[in-house]
Amino acid sequence: MDFRKLASIGSIVLGVLLVIGGIATWIMVSTTLADQRITTPDDAVCLADRDVRGPFTAYCQAMTIDRNVLETTEGLRYAELDREDPLRNVAQSASFLQASLFTSVLSFGVAAMAIGMGLLFVLIGLGIRDVRQQVNELAPPGAAGRDMPRSTTAP
Image (cartoon, rainbow, N blue to C red; front, side, top):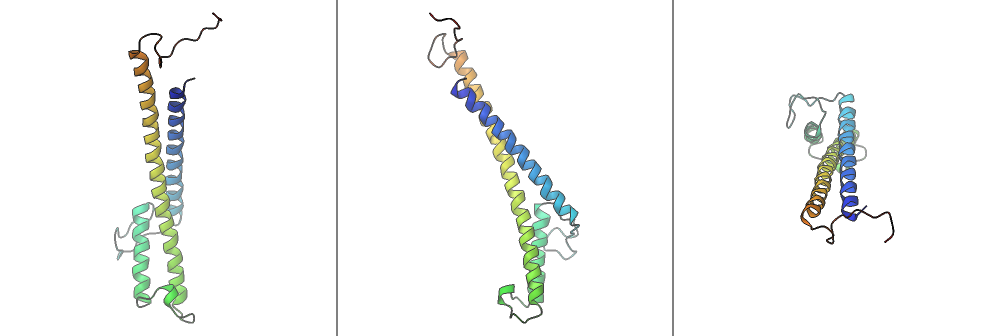
């Protein structure tokens, strides 16, 4: 097996694995978010009154939580609140929820990147395969770079 054929097959296999992994990740994160039964509120920053199942609704929910907690704490973040302030627990919970939602958004991005890179690797593998076929068709018999049948008998 020559290098071009090996590179073509390797690229296609890697691409397919990346696409499958990306799709599986997207489905897993989406399903996990849907299981939480989170809905963006009517007064959401964006995409109001929608189930949180994807990257856009997760981002909107995180931004809405941020806006609401800042209104409640008069613009102070968790670390800025006094340790004895009763709103510190509210700010802490909001911070954790936001971090979880932003992690979901990041996971969707990584999954989309894996799918895109997988498709790119498949196309590269197919391109290498096509170049290999073109070289074999254009090269005269016995030329360097052309696949030649291997003799099973010694000369």
